[in-house]
Length: 494
Image (cartoon, rainbow, N blue to C red; front, side, top):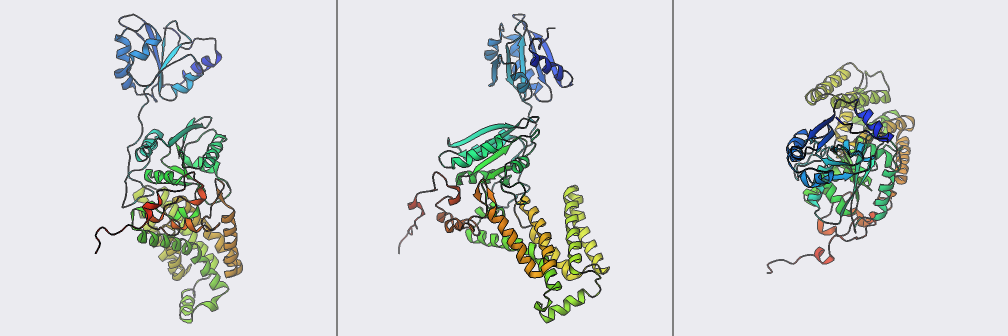
């Protein structure tokens, strides 16, 4: 048997020595039946489909006229057959599901054909962004399959897909998607440059990319919107934004984005605009309630009890009569309990987690009130705040909302309602300074842009959304001609 990697080139020899230590490294020699030419197939069994080798390549190499490597391009009935003399490509090709074909006597001349093993799962309904109305497809861990879902929805030549490789060890494929002639090219260059500058050994998910290309790495607010819905990615591409997809991740990244987008469910676009606007306002109210209700309770009982109506004050005094702790400790105890139940429910298997969340909440809540550790009024407020925080459509923003309650609690204990106002000013200052790809994160509220309010806090009818978002500075600001937006006449006139 001839040595496939026998060469004076040190790089090639080191590849052979390292790969030979792995049990999935296969090197098999064959002889063509007609020409008696000896050839060898080298591959990694964990990355290639051995059945495809036996059915689609090997019979033709054994039975057809095979004299030299150039004949392999015509013999093997596979679309991706490549000849090469570059030794540096051997490692990359083997680790991307290719089979290396060599013949005896030609050491520096070889051929590759691709038969990758299909290990991806089938397309399933969205789990995080589930909707009753609309498509029931979500991304999977295969980048090629995810890109096909986007191509299916935007079948135009203007859809550009550019790939980069990130990670010195993982060699992760990262795809950047945008619409040529619509998307602001400055945003595209910014995304490409930041991804190119990433220096890390392993990138396993799009969450790594978010943390490395965000404008402010120390902000608890996510500055790129992630989604598992192909229809949402297609919609934002049509708006003029940039999408980033990572091989091995079932989530796509959207940039630039704004704060109000994190409180908009994509199901809003499948509903009547009145219902969609109503639900958006409910979510915004729920988020404000979730953050402020417990701090306001602590501030009122600690400093401003004179603001409480007399009838309600007597009920609060009665509920706190046997409580030995100040309101701040009572609130922190319940808030931490809720967080523990959330984490326990999230980390355990689904059926067990649901049981822990429901039973644990009822048992601990009832026991804490009976033991005199907390008041039943605060228990109701904390439970409602936790319920309100679940209305946030984006999971990462929901985590941020959970965190914000604690600094508001601290400021409420220090200075009452004034402390809440001070903490809100700090939060507002941070949001005003925050950007996404250099674009204002608080737009259209600041800077104030009235034309972008048509799809922010409320959603106007599609006929009113003729222009793309102003802050994106798209190359083509109009989504459809102005005459199409004009009010249509009645089909039948009286």
